[in-house]
Amino acid sequence: MNIDTPNSATLAVASDRIIEFPEGLAGFEACRRYTLFHPETVGEALPNYFILQSLDDPAVAFNIADPSLFGFSYEINLSDAESAVLDLADPSDAAVVVILAKDSQAGGNAQLRANLQAPLVLNVRARRGIQHVFARLNYQVTLKSPE
Image 1 (cartoon, helix red, strand yellow):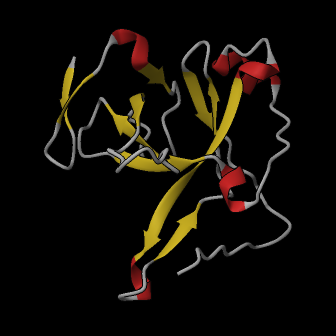
Image 2 (image 1 turned 90 degrees about the vertical axis):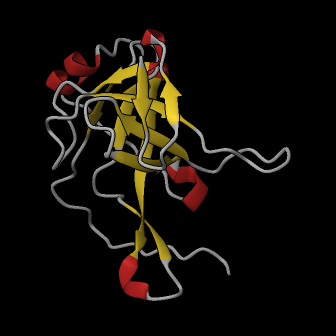
């Protein structure tokens, strides 16, 4: 399957690279099939973030990252229903990532923000995912990257 990405590149996606979000993501419930890739890197550096590209709507793509890159970690207790949606039998098959966004209100010094309130939980073996929305976090966090 080929998909035209928002940056006008065509991405070839093999069927074993498709991640299904049976319930979609908040605000994007109709987008249920995604693929994960990393942006082109310069030199030997590994990317700090990945792109979660919708296969149902090519205009929908999210930058995602491991929250530990920001010094943040989760202990998420999934409900039985969430575990069933993920088809998660072994917790070691789970990966948690956060959606990133640039704060357009910051003017020329755009700040990178991570949505810590609604991380994505992926079953890397079954290629299924959910967005786990916390009803309330007990604190607010603003992380600023060094200049």
